[in-house]
Image 1 (cartoon, rainbow, N blue to C red):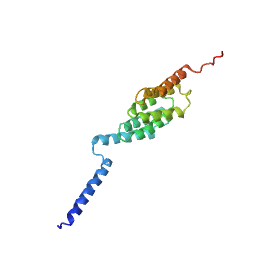
Image 2 (spheres, rainbow, N blue to C red):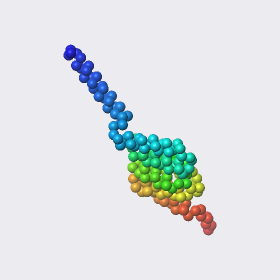
Image 3 (cartoon, helix red, strand yellow):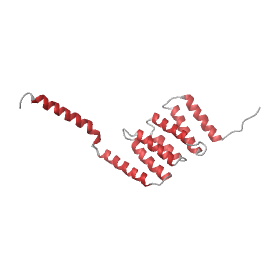
Image 4 (spheres, rainbow, N blue to C red):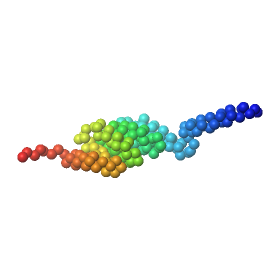
Length: 170
């Protein structure tokens, strides 16, 4: 072997090492990752097989819970939770599962809850809306720290539970 080939061989080896390192996330190295992918495939099959309504929302939440635990999954989980909320707009359980699943990502959860408030009339699903308002209030009391918004959501929840009040005339 000539001395001029040594740098070529070293650079080719370094290139292959970098290439393998970059492709590494595509290969399922562990059985845990394989098991989670299989569970996600099963959940997606249940989503496709489920009719509209509460069963579909349940299947969507199961898939979103799996994605929320993965590294790149909170964005995809948010989309599945939104689909679940659209599938069963009056369900409080879907909202609670979304809050639990995205509790580590408060900004993503905030965005999801705001979309839920904007997507449906508050009076048609008062219990679900109250759950969303309560979750937003706890977010603003806790990790997002905005006391004014927290009080506003507490007032909105109180007025939703009381119902419309008659205006007083003086």
